[in-house]
Structures are given as structure tokens and as C-alpha cells.
Length: 296
Image (cartoon, rainbow, N blue to C red; front, side):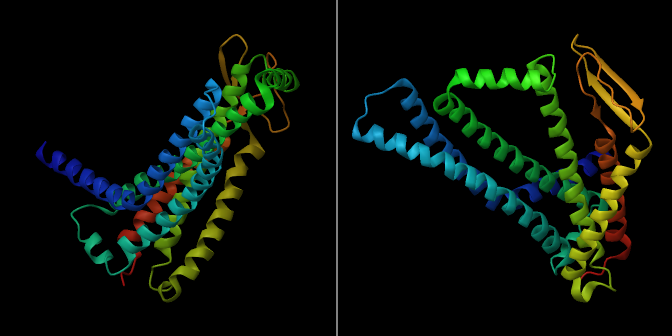
């Protein structure tokens, strides 16, 4: 019992340190994003309530219109900042001279890698979520106060009819499905990055590690993209949300198209294969870190 508690404590401290190290810079962008969104929200609220257009109120409303554009740009920039830290911190903390300290910590290579994957994979997902939410905020504001709510309702009704969905809930189901698929892809992306950086630091590649890391990344990404499509050439595991609220799961051939109660099936192959690839990459990267890597 004591040993298990120590194990959890060490991994917890590792997670905490990785999170704090990454948050020192990344959190500044989120703080700025929150401030910009607050400015936009206040201006949009005053505009909606029709507050008397004093000079201050007018400037605040005009500032809010600029603020939402800045918010989208900052949210977009956050994706690249997070990606930079995914690469930079992993390489610096494990494969630079600092790596000697990291690999002497009383934790396994699985824990070292798992901590990085959880922290920076989480940051990557959050950065995309923020970007989508801010973009959705702009679209919603534009729909209500620029396009008009009546036109929005008409557009939604046409979309439901054109896509042959039984209801708007089907659109939500599709959105959730693609979000899960997207998160699985992001996790695979971070896993490929970590595997590429780790493999580039074995002795044979170490002299030009970053060049080989890029080459390995594209080679592995190509192989995984090809592997992801293989199951769909044989069969498709599908999930259907039916109009009566029930859920159906089954297997169909690639050339079959199933439309039950006006619903189109979700192909689960890509999500499952992506998760399996992440598991395989995790243990492959851990093995490279533990057995093959040459610390500078």
C-alpha cells in the first residue's frame, strides 16, 4: 500500500511540474483571451440592450467589435504556441543536457512520457476547443445581429431537410462525433511528434536529430494514415442514432450505404484505429526512451 501511494505521488508531482512549466507562458495567452472576450461581451450586451449611445458607450461597442476579431486571432495563435511547446519542452526536458536530470528521476519512462502526453495533449485539445468556441461565438453574434434570427431559423430548417435529418438533434450528434474523431486525431498527432523526436535521438540519427525528426514524422504519419484506411477497405463498424432515440451498432461492407429512419451511419473505424495507434506509439516511444536513446 505504501509503495503504491509513493508511485502515485511521484507521478502526480511529475504531472504538476509539467503543467506548471507549460502554464507559465501558455496561460498568459488564455488570460489575454479572457480579457478580450470580456470586452466583447460587455460591448455586445450594451448594444443588445440599446443603451444610450454616449461617447464612452459608443467607443466600448466599437472596441468590442474589434475585440472579437482579436480574440479569434489570439485563439488561432494559441494553436501554434501550444504546438511549439509540445516540441520544444519535450526535446529540452528529455534530450538536452537537462535530460540527464529527467532520466535520473525516480519514475519510469512510461511515466515521463505519460506526463508529457497528458499535459501537452491536453493543452492541444484545449487550444482547439477555445478556437472553435470563440469562432462559434462570432458566428452566433453575427447570425443574431447581422443576419437575423429569422433567417438563421430558416437556414437551419433547410439544412435539416437537405441532409435528410429527422431533427436538429441529429446535427448535434454529428458534431459530437466529429469532435471525438478530431480529438483522437490530435492525440495521434502528439504521439507521432513524441515518437519522432525520441527516435531521432538514437546514436545513428543524433548528429542531425531535428532533420531526422521531421523525416521520421512524415514517414510515420504517412504509414499511420495508410493503416487507418485499411479496416474500411474490408468492413465498417457503424453507429446510428435513430429518429426514435435508439442507437444501433453493426458491421457493413464498404460498398453498402445504410440509411435507417433517415439517418446516416457514423463510421467508427477511424476513431478506434487512431486510439490503437496512440497506444502502440506510446509503448514504442517509451521503449526508445528507455533502451535506445542517447542523451547529449
